[in-house]
Length: 188
Image 1: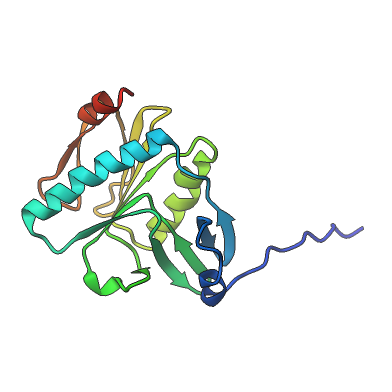
Image 2 (image 1 turned 60 degrees about the horizontal axis):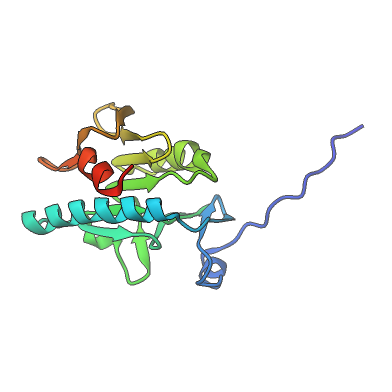
């Protein structure tokens, strides 16, 4: 007896994605749409603190990079369609930016783990970010109090740090982020 056929998810185009309601946060992996949960208070607080530290560094250095926070689309591929909304991203090539999104891989991405679906950040996004040539990808896990740094250049793959660490952002020469300060400020 042949196995039962499973219904296949509908594969969408960029035009169909752009027609989706703005009030819903969604990402697309291989043409399939996935809804995203609303971020928690701790998620937003960590995101704000990290964005502030990184943005202050970029402004002080007067470098070519820009920082963006979710929701801001990154189109990694047209076919199959892959669109993500990283919690924080740094783009150093202004040619990748248009009024709607970043077209191509950002240089640096930070995702803050949602308790509802940690495998998204640890497995799915890790796979796509590495394969579409994001240079550096951090996974900040407030529940486990761990930061996983994935640096895809120079064969450095993955290093975990506790929340009391000072961590170097590898794409920059001298940006260090003190997670003790962030954890103390947020009481985590």
